[in-house]
Length: 208
Image 1 (cartoon, rainbow, N blue to C red):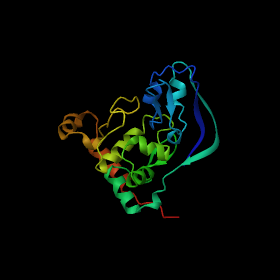
Image 2 (image 1 turned 90 degrees about the vertical axis):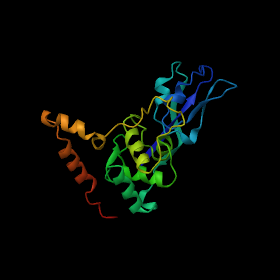
Image 3 (image 1 turned 60 degrees about the vertical axis):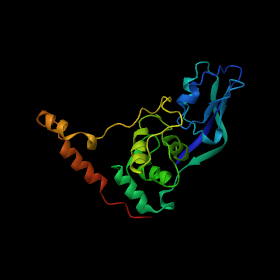
Image 4 (image 1 turned 90 degrees about the horizontal axis):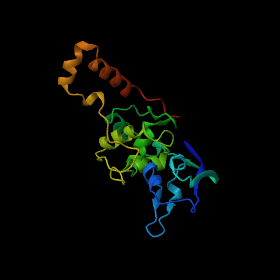
């Protein structure tokens, strides 16, 4: 569960409407008003990652304590858990596998978010807190889960954001010709795949 206890506050006198905050926000919580040319925060989407504060060129944004803490979590047990397991394993994840080390979030939670309506990495992040740490690395598991659900990669920024660079190939995507070419150079693609398949298919923990 992600605890959100800070929120960004804008100093309008310093804001130059440069839109950097809109590009670095993992949940698309920031926009720039066309008339005032000032940044505007959609506060319910913010999960306190501090990207906006750390990258604002005029230091117009400052993180301050929230009046009330927020908790972000999508309970995988609130949906059909067999569907959660199926989606995770189609994406080549064990349901209990941690996919965001900053928040210790598991694949099952992201899968549950998708099964209950999330269609973009940004929306999954806003609901779960995934990507609120480094904000970059754990985008890939979300893209894999979305693809396994038949949802093509799409971001509301249409590729203009600075956090997601598109899906990265996994060992399962490597062509056989490449595997054959490097088989005698110390690479063990088949053994790696077999080991990972064992992890993916490992038994689930007993329900509590």
